[in-house]
Length: 458
Image (cartoon, rainbow, N blue to C red):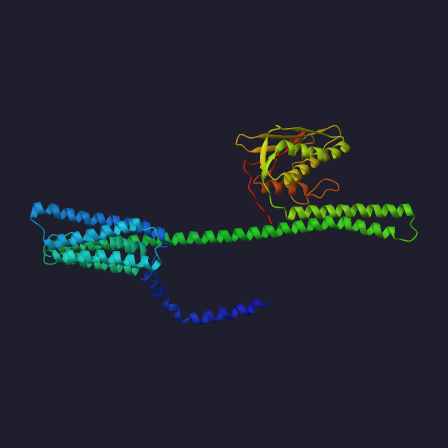
């Protein structure tokens, strides 16, 4: 509300100020379109490619005209020495310029690009005008040298410069017809029409392509901005969901601690009941500590320290650590791995990721079940570690959420175990996937690249 009037004032002022100039819109639009000073070569590479093509074509054109003069020597007598000298000089200069363009690798500034463009236009125009003047009242085809300047102006410059080059080419055509029969003027007029149509048409096509390119570039920028905005909103939404989940997980143990302590300190409580309340408060405090620790590990994982590690030692260590918990649940752990298999990964972090998977598998099992740890080399040289249990399947409706932080279906679970394990796997350039989810068979897999990458999320 406060910003509304302040934004309306300049709008009204602009409308008032623009009113008198409304009738001049067509003229300003035409002036903008003509744009004599426009220079449309965006970068060094584009200019170098275009200039190489133009220089090569111009060299071929001058060479062709020189060859025609040599042929005409046998038909109509020896051409004038001045024409041969000018053609030779033009060919040598153009050849030197062609070699320079081809050999030039250093960056060409925009000012230099503009200068070289106008130099090419001027060089051909002067060469065409001089040769046409030297061959007055005779057969001449040197107005053909204006073909490339028209195309170059159409490609790179505004409509005003293009029209100017076309007018100069038309003038040279009529100069070449001076003193000849009326039919030669008709031919010169036809060439001027061809030059005019060709120049304007090429300029329109190139300008249209450039406008489309600019529009596409603008659309890509808009898409990128939209993508960044969506990513930001998605991150904010994820932070919001995570914050709500954290608040919910923290609120429960805090409430239990608060109520237990209030009950324990209430007058008239006997000693056994008071000790029970203190025990509940202690257990909830430990749960809160575990949740905080897991969240810190999830939010800021340690950098990966990759080394060559024996995979069998890693899996046996994880099985040994988890075996006490497995025994309490009546679950067996089996390890199947080649004792000589080695991989490149951070042993400590991989211990944590695999332990989280194994403990989850044990908690999902029934008494008498077996959790299997298996590792083998894939065909691409990477190592795949599988954690398999017979407690499946995981309900399809919760499968998309199992890796989300603080999502859990386990009583007393923090919901961060799988998220932490996935972060560790991704830090190694891999991922954790639910590879199999069938009745009596669930398999989580980590594929470790042959050469893991050091990464830090910090």
